[in-house]
Length: 275
Image (cartoon, rainbow, N blue to C red):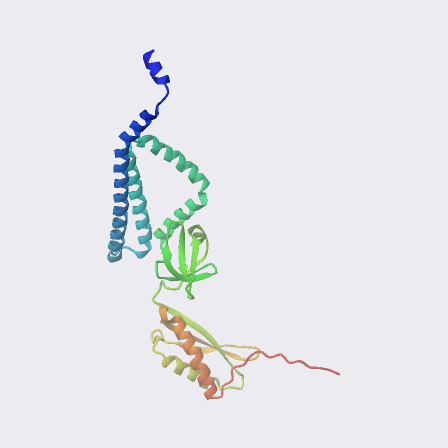
């Protein structure tokens, strides 16, 4: 009966204050540990980043590894602080599992992106630094994250693409092979000298240090068009110099054709007026 009366008696301010004073050292110690833990997490993540930069691990995995380690360390720090505050961790962990199930149901798209990101790391259709085309988007892969992949365009824009979209879209990797074949079609008039034009095209190719001699370049008549003869040029070039060689040939061929009076036909529309 005395115990029941004690339980039913009102809690006084002095009791609350004494409880707070007893709890204050634990709170202060937990805050100190939390602050030190934050610094240690930053230090460890930075150390892991430096180690990854020197390691032989694929650059594509670096962001995943750093993020996973950071999340794990934060979970450990949270559990330690809870223990110091006297908060039972078992019910909290059980609550997290229930919350995790609810979160997974509410965030199916995000989890699908994470799963797709893991698929990209395993299948490796591209790596960081590759120039790729994903559906209608082009750019250099700068990061493969948990949820999205970041492309940097030629004009320095960042494009964030959800990983789940990448695994279902067509991917063209322009950097996977050391060499690419450049195909360009040039047009000359029917009255122009084909052999001379072919010789000028070969000279333009040979004058460039970027064009590969093995396999040898191919310059042949492609077809007889409606108003011009099409000449196709197929040249192998290092992947990183593809656009540079393309621009060089277009400029050099125009100069050589003009110097030797070889016409480059263009579409014309003739309008006849009848009175």
